[in-house]
Length: 123
Image (cartoon, rainbow, N blue to C red; front, side, top):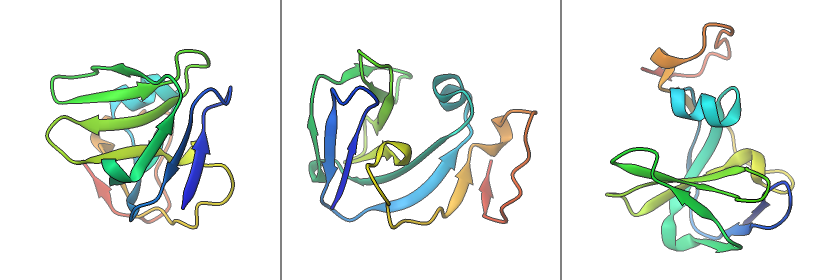
């Protein structure tokens, strides 16, 4: 089980189901929200228990993002047509026990850095 929280501790969550797909997203939205890139993994939405007042933001016609309205932490991403939810790896309290598998949306990454860790890159 993984436990996580936002910076102000107003939102806490646990992930009790199988965790998959640890990745780094380099899309424009994730870069604007995080200032760089967003590391996440996903689990069945029913396996993520959220406590606190998450503000859900419709960031596109296909997905929404869960943000803490107090500290602004970007914690969750959920596609409307999927039964999984992504959660921020940086919000996990303590070690995750996970290893990144890939980088996604690399075609829109910032021009101010290189991806040089040897992991697969998906445009």
